[in-house]
Length: 554
Image (cartoon, rainbow, N blue to C red; front, side):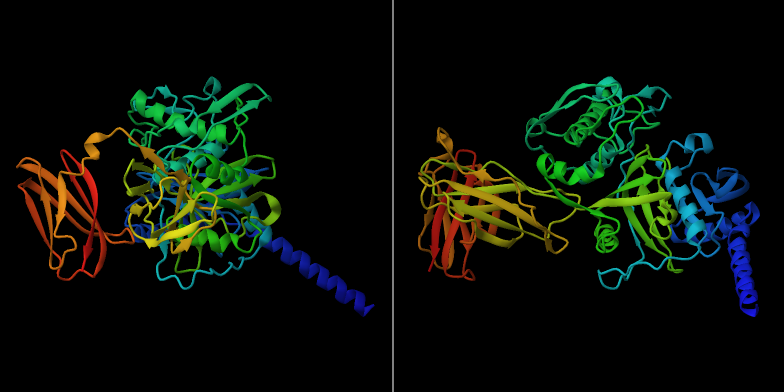
């Protein structure tokens, strides 16, 4: 009998403990205190002077139960306080973007994220231990937000309040291009890449309210990055600026084979790596959130200014795609991630998406697109008929800096061979021994001290160019003496007073010396006492000629 009394007492203790866990919720007064205290912290951290007014808040509730309190800041911003967690009560915040009142908020990705974090805290009841970063010690605590692109799908207004079509400019019936397409377009705009797409794609959308064939010729499209704006909502814009963003978003939607619908267009985030690789010159991969590499790799990407695209779903069946572009490690070991919701800037902010976020299955990060890294674009490889050398040129995004490049060549059906490794420039002088062979070239970039797999550029086959007589006159410029010793002398038979450009390359193709001369007379003397012995390629360009000559230092 004593045994059963002990069991009964234990059960009562457990029930009382369980009840107390959910009955001691945060009220609005406590939430205001939490928000006030936190505002002091973030104002100091982010060098801001936003204000908090007690009366300016609203509640997020479900089934008559308060989940969170949203405090609006002045002149803009918000702080969201959980109704369940006193250990880490701040769900999210922003000092620059706003959250609308309840009715409009429920349409936004931010609503699902806030609701998911709050319910996760309710049912988790404890603070989840973070996976340790595999990137080594972090000596800084804020990275990002990196992305300034504030794009959305529909319901965009100009500075006069008129409804305008931007990312939905070219979509059928001006339907939404889809949140996955917006996330992809946002990162393409962040990198301002590619200059030109790759290939062509068409597909048939046979489902729902909008059906038909849709196509995009990526390889014939030069994307108009200089015309695209970071922000369109409540801003003035020209038709050309809206067309530029609309073209990019529509191409992203076609690449993803979007199901266009009047009430929302759909695709999958895990389709982005394939479409990025096939059509937009990007390498990336998709990982599920349960993978042990997901959070450490996400952190690494954010620290290195490479934003991540997240797939977020709810238990009601709705899915969202958002861009994660910032990380803040607080002094209290909280971990906030900055999210760009893809809703014209509304709801963007810092959220605790890792801690307790997946508990209870209310809102889940399914996974994300990691290592979304641009690939170089190799330009046409062309050599003059009768010449034995040419410049191989390529381009790379200016948003991030490549540590180095590797260039490979294949002759006929032979293997790929490295001809330049850890090369710093985007132009390489290449000597060709036999123009009767087929020469192929490709290049990849080292980024963040990594050679990313499958990140090779397009392949360019060397083409022989004929009929450019002004570039083939070998009598205008000469090297004297050749071989040379202490001084390299360039002689020209052109008329006096012309401009001339001189570039000297060593046999690895590296730029060794450069000179731009105005009012060139008849001779240029270049001191060469300190040059190493060997062969050098001298490229001389003037108004009447372009020649590459071989010279030997003895």
